[in-house]
Length: 288
Image (cartoon, rainbow, N blue to C red):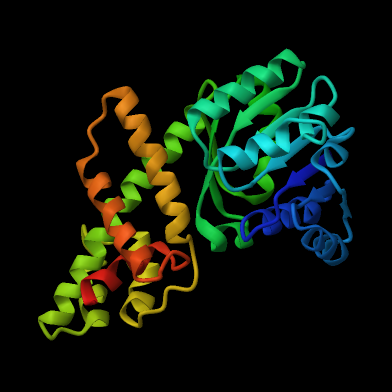
């Protein structure tokens, strides 16, 4: 078993850290709001620290799941940052969805200190984190990944290294691009069924068994029909991710016309007050 630090105890990080503790690892957590860290430690009989640096001290692996590029830099760098507390040979595993640029920046800084850095964004949402069945897409040095993979396995259904530093984040962008178009298509399909006077449940029962079937259809059609959007991955976070995708597409020369359009549709949802609704709320703008 390993000594592990986990930084960030949101709806994803808290259960992920819990799985690590349940697997027998020695886990110390940090959260910007310390009350959450204290509550986690009491629930899981683990430890908490006041700063990322304190949490990372003597840890073999430091996991993070925070909000964005700036949040990640904040927990890594500076006087109280995790890098300052990590020992040579330790590895930082970042589960945040951030830009490949900040990933490569931090990878280089970590290497200068003799520590590893694996970008390891996840897919599967809150339910995937709670059930320990996340898809984890990784980038970084092969040997460091091989050492970290058994630790990540505590909450992963699948974990793969896709290439060097930044490859995990690039793969997560592929994931978000695919989801954006798929959810918009599902929203339009269900909206069309409503306008046509069809039973959504009957329609989904039939078409989900063919080529139209998807995880989103199976898991979100009932809540979409009921206008229930208070679960899952928030629109505000999806727009953050899509902004990364679109900026990177400009840099690489990729064409993402559907993604750009759906990003604007999510902007409309924000205008309806749905910034904290989950991503299936695209159907709400069609009903307004």
